[in-house]
Length: 139
Image (cartoon, rainbow, N blue to C red; front, top):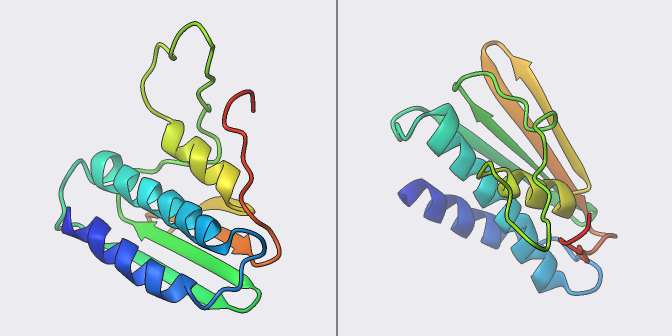
């Protein structure tokens, strides 16, 4: 998936401008992972693998943090209201999926969806003042 490589490389370059607190490199990587997961969901689910449908990924970065907007023309889907998977020590969830949304919601400070003119618009942001110290089990 060439789109994913381009998004990662662009984001990696732009996020260098954000002076994240603590483990800055780890936080940048976590933000990029959240973006990749959401773009992958658009390609697989909203666009059903059709890479010709447009996806717009907008990075806004400055010293205070970053905001990433992902827009697509796929079927209406609100990841903010999607049920999150839970991890039981004894077994994995019966229904696959949802972990990308879980990761993105845990990593980012803001995670919002809206439907505008038949387009999904997901806006995520991360403040430079926060780091990523997520405990993925038990949350």
